[in-house]
Image (cartoon, rainbow, N blue to C red):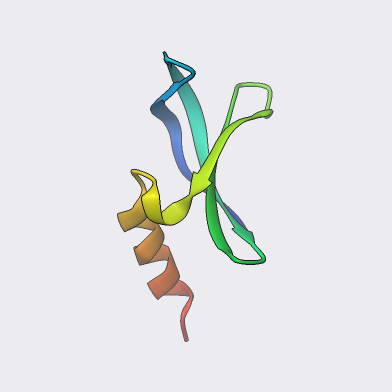
Length: 66
């Protein structure tokens, strides 16, 4: 699964604030938020439960349940 959470997420990577695209992906163990640059390269990744998008992730999980 691949779902866009934000087209312009502001996060701090290596001490520098960057504007990146945040997407939700599924992994074998759960969900991850992946931050991509303008060329689509992965810049940063984190568990969905600790990201600033955790509330959106919970809503998405509820939508997916039958």
